[in-house]
Image (cartoon, rainbow, N blue to C red):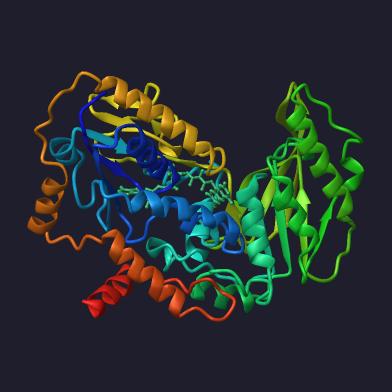
Length: 438
Ligand SMILES: Cc1cc2nc3c(=O)[nH]c(=O)nc-3n(C[C@H](O)[C@H](O)[C@H](O)COP(=O)(O)OP(=O)(O)OC[C@H]3O[C@@H](n4cnc5c(N)ncnc54)[C@H](O)[C@@H]3O)c2cc1C
């Protein structure tokens, strides 16, 4: 068994929290600092998971228990690269685990992507979820039609949040600034467009079924193009896809003229150009067919007039000081990046899977770390004391877990009846809550 190690985890999302949980269990003498650039913990559970999916967020209760362990500290409001360089962290701790997720939208790679009204999912989702870095993203929602590109659950989240009514969102924690814009928007139509066929869509059945329950909009698709049955060698996939096909059959048949608010689930089309002068006025699509399992353009094009486009085609690692990036993730071998440097979660494997997928992945990396350090008998690194000294020297207002609990309590306190919390969307407002309580 390795001695108690001094470990820093960069990022308090699910992957970082599961890594901390595994270390606490398997090498309880280790001390762990979990730093995050935000003053709030838990990554995409707060800033990604849809505000009307509150039960999914209950996973934070398990993370709270890990944070409350005597050998674990949350040190929020300190960003790797922005507030502390990687080399400094490596100097202070025996082990650095990168758990930053994949903080950059993958680009569509088509002309016109820089026009006003074109957003990546990250920006749009962070905006409606009150992520402090995106509070000022301010999409124009004085619009009639929106297009959402992608056939995964994030695309469904975006379309649903745009179409939900105030009453439907009453028990959500949608950020105030987004609520005001979304509920006052004259938006009539949302097209969710995927490049592959309906049977290839990555929707989960629960998320898809919610489109049958929207109170102010009907959901349409081309039911004539749906296969009668889907069969794969993978039984689980067969079941999920057939359930989704049944759900698609339960929606309305698309027709040339539709009145009233509507969501359109369109398949087999790829965007090829974003139209408009400085702002988006439409998207040109090319129809696809599936050949040898791949979506291939047919050459036939069509256009959808729209004033907003949200592209939900995945995320990647941006440039982060000193870290090698390859194919959108931090280059690693089973989680190991270099001596004393490891990576977990989306930063390691890319943006796929659910919150739970990160658990086993982080556990495996922790096993690897403990194996690498099995013969280490002593460590002379300063650990938490070194970080505290850095924060003092550099005037960094670090946020502890107790501080977060005060912010959390204040958000809950100011929420209206049904809503679980009214989020603070600026770090300075969170810090002033702490100043008031001192
Ligand atoms: C829009 C959306 C909705 C989703 N909904 C669901 C759902 O309903 N159910 C489900 O099971 N899964 C859902 N997922 C997937 C789930 O959120 C991910 O599997 C999971 O969050 C990945 O965990 P992570 O820890 O790797 O990254 P993240 O959750 O992104 O956490 C990364 C953390 O690192 C911090 N960080 C980033 N850069 C730095 C830096 N330089 N310095 C310090 N800290 C930094 C961030 O602030 C963040 O706290 C959703 C994902 C998205 C994008």
